[in-house]
Structure formats: structure tokens, C-alpha cells
Image (tube, rainbow, N blue to C red; front, side):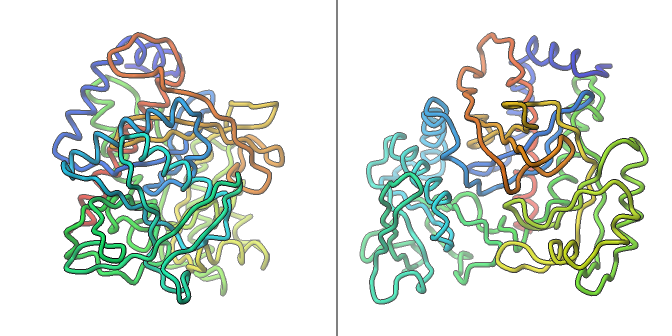
Length: 402
């Protein structure tokens, strides 16, 4: 059995095609999300996904070679589900004052256009954005100009005025559920609107990831501990009135028991943007949370109140960028690794949350890491972890249909 990272890296690079063929076969009857971003932490003894976003918002952080690969994969995905598609809509978030988010949309729009689709419109159903107009002009952090157009659903089709959109790229994570009836929509929309944070949970993702990983590791005789961070779900908590802090504290001590030198991450079970995260060294720290610490954990993006959390093993990152602790994020299109970057933070330690104030991004290209090619690169291992996590989210989406 493969029991350490050196053996695992050697095995992955020498068995690249058979590993990818296995993942392809596992996902053959599933619908992969149009895209994912997977945050991966690497320590001395494991490389593990610690978060998975189904509506990623960092395409501006990819290198241009990877953005080209994104376009190639987008073309294949869109034509698979909408063979006659000509007009593409990108459905965005309503927090349009976030200019870095708008940069993300500009680069995503470029990738879709580079995929061969000339008519790529940016859409919103949020009437409050438009006042009496049907268009909104915006400028991104990099000074690109964007035009957001008011969309509506007529006869179960997404339209801009009289023009019908053939395929919708969803880039709204629905931390707050959109007031749109997607149930009878004939226009293909990916990723599924059912996978918004109002309906999805981190714990469910990691349950499916564990299921995927165990099957993968059994097939290739790999120790699963090399590729996952232990976690527990704690329900029925209220940080405002301290309800359930004792349950969180007990879970922290259980998760930490396998490695008493490590820290433990407490994360709101739903949500993104690095909000609702605390890093602790013991259960006692949780019991002693002051009001500031509890307020930080009480609500997330769009003021969603956290009533459940996951308690996740902290993976002590060994990666550095300019002497700052760093972690890897892999972008996948239709379950295929297409790009990535490093997130580093000078204000945090190797066991802390890097997705917070002080973070910077370093682009790195993984476009050379393709199936049916020889290579000897650590990025190959990140790619496989990302693909397994994406396979888990395909199972999530299938489950959310029920």
C-alpha cells in the first residue's frame, strides 16, 4: 500500500493515464458541474482538499495559458448540453461594487468568447440593479468595462428583451436564494442552480468526497489518509447565545486527537469567501470565545446565520511563496483540471486561514498537465485531488435533484 507522499507522487506521475481513465469512468453517468474551484492544502504527510466552490469567482487569477485551456473545455461542455448554442449568458452576483469580482466576470467572459461564442452577455435578474434602465455599465478593478443586461424568463426560456439566450453560465453562488423559478426552465443552465449555498453544505460535499476517495484508494491501493482532512459536522449551534459551543469544543478535541500539534478549523457549513472561519488549538478555546469571536462565526455572506459548522483537521501547509505560507487552488471545467493559482498570506501562519485579509495570488500554469502526456510535476497530484473533489460535487448535484 502507498503510505507516504513521495510514493504517491511517483505513482501518480507513472500511472497518470490509468488514474484519469478511472476518474472518467466513475463520472461517465454523472453531470459534472460546469466548473469548480478546489482549495488544496499540502503538509508533510497529506495533500487534501479543504474547500470546494461550485461557482468559482477567481478566473482573473489564472494565467492566460490556463484561461485558454478553460475556453477549450468550456466549448466542449457547452456543446455537449446545448449543441446549437450561439448566445451565451453569464448570470452574475448582485454585489457589483466588488470590483475584483467584476474582474473575475471579465475574464470568464473572455474565456467563453475565446471558446468560439461571439454573443456572450452578462445577465442579472435583480431588478434593484437597474432602476428604470435595462442595462448597467460597470468598471472592473483592472478597468475593463462591463455591461450587465436585465434578464427575464418568458415561456420557460431566459431572454434579454426579445432575444433568447441559448445557454446560461451560472456565476451566482446563491448564498441567498434568488427569487427566480428555475424549476421548469428550458434554457440549459450550468452549474445547476440547485447547488447554491442556500441548499448545499460543506459537510455533504466531504461525505461524498470520502465515498469517492475510498473507492479510488481501494482501486489503486493507496492509504486514504494521504488525501483527506478529517472532519465532523456539528448541528444546532447559535454563536449569538453560545448555544452548542460545548458540542463544537468536543468535536474539536476529537478531530485534533490524531495530531495534537495541529490546529483545527471551524467553518460555517454553508458559504464562501473565507467568511465564518475560526482556527483553534483546543476545545477550551471555543468555550472561551469572546463576543468578537462569536460574532465572526455567527453570520456569513449576505448575513446568513450559521446554525451548523464543520470541524475540520487543520493541514499545516508546507508551501511558500515569497516566504509566505501558501495553498493551491485548482480550477476545473466539467471535471477536467484547467488552471490554478497559489493563495499566500503574509499575515497568517502555516496552520491558519489564508483566505482572509492580507492574501495575495500567484498565477501558475498547469496547462502542460494534460491527459496522455508524460510529465514529472507536483501539479499532477493537485490535478488528481481536484478531479476527485469535482467528482464528489457531481454526486452532490445528483443528490440535490432528489
